[in-house]
Length: 145
Image 1: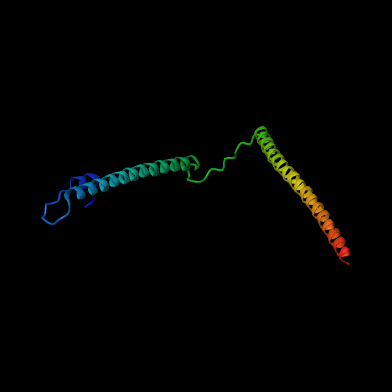
Image 2 (image 1 turned 45 degrees about the vertical axis):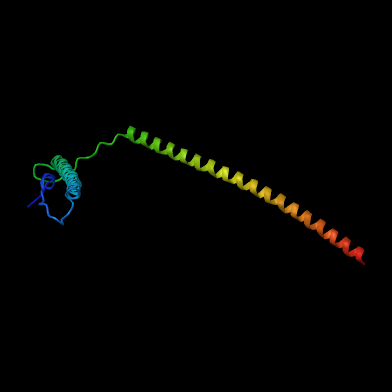
């Protein structure tokens, strides 16, 4: 027996003294029935989509075969102007991408040069500080003698 959402909603249970709470059972059955209804509707929709796809496939196969049931090998018309236009668009897109990558690389190079300059300045500052510290240490040692 196949149930539908109405069968679930209309199901009645007899009352018992120590049985389940009737309101809880009814609430649960309503939830189950709604889910069941949604699933059934979704299944019907999917079946319709499958039928449509099958019809489209059949139409395509009919159009693509000759009377003897063999595949047609109709040459595809190639328009040189369309091909040139598509090639131009592809080349322009490639150039745009290349320019974007070039700008990004130049920006990164600029940042790296700034960082290198900053590190060199820090290096020079440290060298100067070390020299001064060494000179002070040398002077202090000389004065102790």
